[in-house]
Image 1 (cartoon, each protein chain N blue to C red):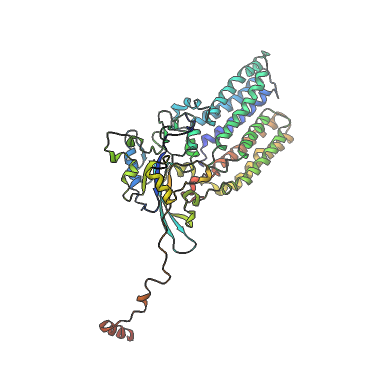
Image 2: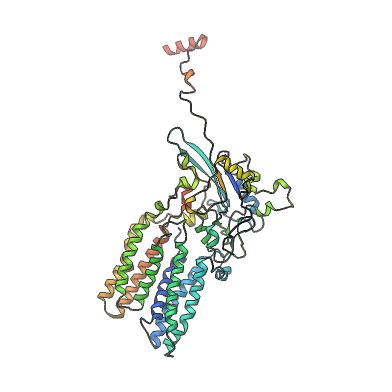
Length: 243
Length: 289
């Protein structure tokens, strides 16, 4: 079971737009909320002095300093990339970790997991977190209980993080289909893999921030710097200057 | 990585245990009667105590038996099988030595080879992990086997043990030295982890959460680094150099017993560092590398 499928019919995944993400953490909260049903994602001491808990999605913030010009802040959501060569799957000794042949989603069967933590070690991206109460590994399911759920209205059949994103920075679709909206977006915007040197072949792609406007040579304030006060203000300026 | 005591105790004890079982199996020493009972018993006790310690590391040990199911892909599953098959294969040889039954010793050679293979499977659990460049290197299996062989030779009272000890110290020092360059050689940086290197030099502006989490506790462990240099010296001296001297200076079984204790102390120091100094690439996202 923990052998990777040679081929998956679909490659369902996310495309995350670093240009539009504003770092509001709504995806983090929506993810936690949706996945807190059933067995749930436990928290430890959530209202105490040292709160901690299992999350399947985190939003980092980075500052990037170009060679010239001012630094830029980038909000960076990080979650499971549903890799084609998922190292977390093959290391699993119990068969709890698996990648689905039909859509490429990487899942954990909690009924088989013994909580050894080896899959979390194998993942370069920190996508897996141990549930401290249940002692089993948790990870992004790509909301497999939403995307095929016919009890939900059609517009809700998307991962909770995608559905909730207020800026449309998260896109969900089949990255194995070159004609899908997400695949076209990746081509248009130059979507890329994280840590390609570790050869995990992630399904999820990240879209780089768009180029900023060209910086003006002269200061925007230049016309104001030489301001000459006239009338009452000019009189006040002269009087105050003499005091 | 978090140096969990259960995993350190497991790998040190079971490594030494399987090493001793290998030399008993190979017939490097063939005890009889009660000495055989205690010698084989020590090997079995170390190996089994180590394996039991490993189960304390599990979050959900009731599923531990399922760890035998993925032998085709998982080194941990292979380790589980190798350990059990080794212990079963060597049992008749141990029984024969103890009770003087004179049974065929061929099983001992097979069991001895399996014992060393078990140690290799343990090493491969760590070696296979690309996300920890210090582990993903040839020194990992060489060191795990080196510790098992050296520990086994000392505990089995082998005359050649001092040579194995000295070689182990050499490899250990080399592994510390080469290990320091492994993270950089793997090529993962915050720039590649975020893909932002094309824009400029990225650094952490704000963390995703103010509290602790599993990743920080388990894989971004940085406690105790300030004593690392001292511990490295202790590990290199105690694992091999001191045992070699002790076997040479103190005659008879007492020398080997003392050497064994000092060697285990060195093995614990080395194994603690093996985890504590291992840098996981996920630390890049948190600006901790």
